[in-house]
Amino acid sequence: MEQTCAYPYDYSWIPDSVQTLPVDSLWGKNKFYITSSNYTTSLREKSGNDSIMSGLFLTFFIVLIIFSKEIINVSPSIIKSFFKLKNHEKIEERLAISNQRNIVVGLFFYYYPLMLSLTLREQIVAKYNMTPPLFFLILLGAVICLWLVRKGAFSLLSWLLNEKYAFNFIEKISYNYFIISVFCTFPISLTSFFWPELDNKLFINLLIYCALFVYFIYLVKTWQVIKSRQFSLFFYILYLCTLEFLPIALTVDLILTI
Image 1 (cartoon, rainbow, N blue to C red):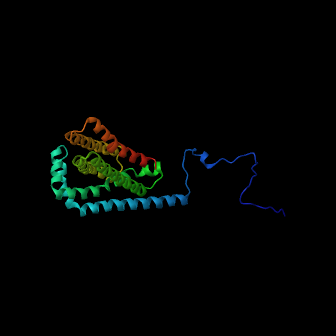
Image 2: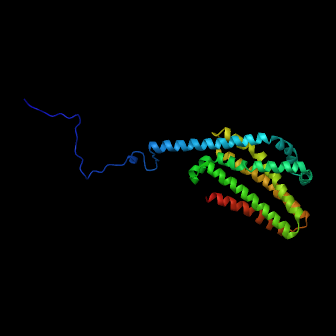
Image 3: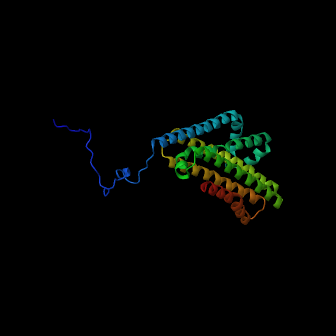
């Protein structure tokens, strides 16, 4: 009786000269591969970041509701002062309105860091390898630092030139136009947040154009104030370079290099 040994599989020997190709040869080297554990971790991190940003967004709306009375009281005077320098003076003459305006400015410091972190959250992760909540904190700190630097510079100029009115007034005007810029860009930000499927670049360009337009009007009003105090055009150019363009450029450069 012939006895045979049967195996379920037929094995063959592969010589050492034959090299086994890597799995990425099937799809190309430009593909990105992750393991299941890393994929699960990335999903958890993304979910956690989205929850934090949603919480920050909800907090902003709650704060707006709490201080809605101040915002409503200030808005008509702020909007009327957009093109008229005299209306800026009227705001400073009314102590109640000016105090409420200062409160609204403090609230709106929260706005630009939050909206930029929400609008650019995918680019933040891809380009800077940074979570949106961390980027928000950095932006918020940069805005506060920029405000402190400008406030210190205005105080220093007032003391050096013995001209307290002009630079104090310019500082207050900057608060008014900062609020106006929020009024102009807030609808655009809400649209990009509730309709994320639309072109993100379009919203970013609209935000930039609106902010630049408001900033240009602000610069025109600062020139009117400085000219009324008998300062020269050369002084105004120095003012623009030191108190307007330089702090903003340094802040943006700091953010981009992080």
